[in-house]
Image (cartoon, rainbow, N blue to C red; front, side, top):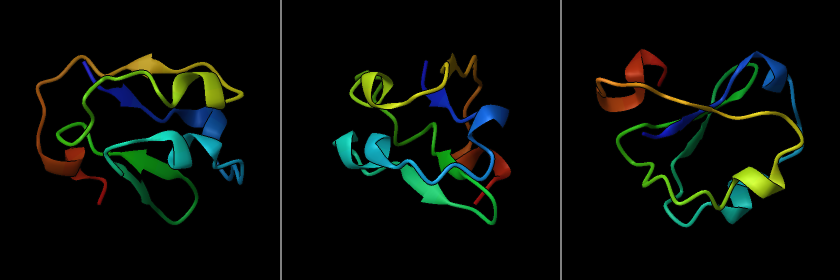
Length: 68
């Protein structure tokens, strides 16, 4: 299951998680970043870089889950 960006990331400007992502699946929204669940390979590279708790997306997946 892919990771999702949650409410604690609203207006977060700490982007080390984006840099750590080998798939470039983070996309910028108006107030926060989003992870495309189709592009995310669940590698966990972003997890240690983020100061908030991550959640796994339970699926089913659709491109950008309507957030792009």
